[in-house]
Image (cartoon, rainbow, N blue to C red; front, side, top):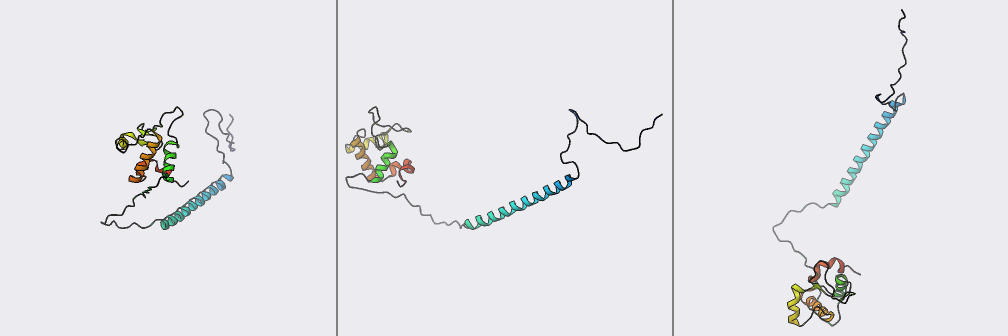
Length: 176
């Protein structure tokens, strides 16, 4: 009877659909690669910690310390209101007209420009007929005509400044 050999046998990896995956980093270089990877992780961790520390110092200088709340009321600045009484349209009203209706009182069809969000907004200055219609009639201005719309806008501007057009202020308050 033949006895099995006592010499070490060379192991071959199993191949096939159910075999375990072959490691790519097998061999003597595996240990040095693992050490290099650990070292690079430490460097990345140290650098990120340093960046966080620097950011904390920079932000800490930029942030002012919180002040104690006082019982005294705070002063709130009101928006600047410009009053003009001469016959020419002030530049602010010209910019308001450009922003509200692109400077047009009538559409291409010949109809009075109406507001996109609120159809009650009428004409060159988009004067709201519901809010200002009665006052315009009392003053003798027809907001559906360009002259009446302009006169009513001048009246509103003289009485209330730019407040009636505050919803479009982001457009017309920019320096052009």
